[in-house]
Length: 306
Image (cartoon, rainbow, N blue to C red; front, side, top):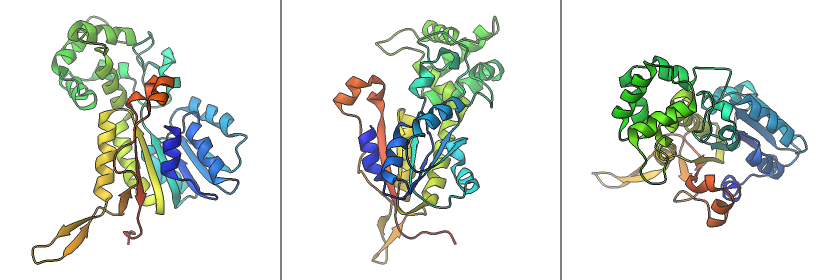
């Protein structure tokens, strides 16, 4: 939803913008062009291959560009380290990129066989194969339930542990086969879908990063600055919806009469009352966009830290 995202962020000439999930810089290019030669872009991505693609894509775009290898959950520290204390707009585009999905060696997709890695940052942390090899059945069940919303998490966790006792579960094909044997096929959805989502989110700490990015990012915004979040899974959308709502100013009636404003500082307002979703034309051109949702919040004046 590039057009809706840009409309939500409403970039202005000379503004300072942070793209917390730079990817191949599609959104960032549009933002920086509107910010003009006096604009600044801080682009963050944990995938070094994405940073290389972004650097090439942004080479001809005017404006100041700071590209950083890191995670959007560390947005406050990264901004401070690069001399940015206020931003006019922030974007976080959650989930896995098409480049990552389409590269079997990265291990994100059950559509082709590859090593069961799933790390967005290949230089840090444990892979999905490591996680599966070292966690207890109860821990694997919790991951499947909390990060994948898998209704048969207990059965699948038990099957994974049983399979690893015979041979390491080290490839995407192995995990997909275990899920299909255990859960069976019901409808068009691949039975491994929730498991792959769960292990990917657990490996990369996606939900925790998103929560931190929203909380710290809203504090970084100038009054009038906007925070846009694009999500593809209900868990991520739920976090964006709830965290934005918590900062929105609401009037509460008092028992003794009158009203007071309540909100988690800093105060914000929703730019769009409901999440925006892609239109039929965009879904036809890019079927992976079908589950996308865009939410945008604007920081209001007041609520500055003491």
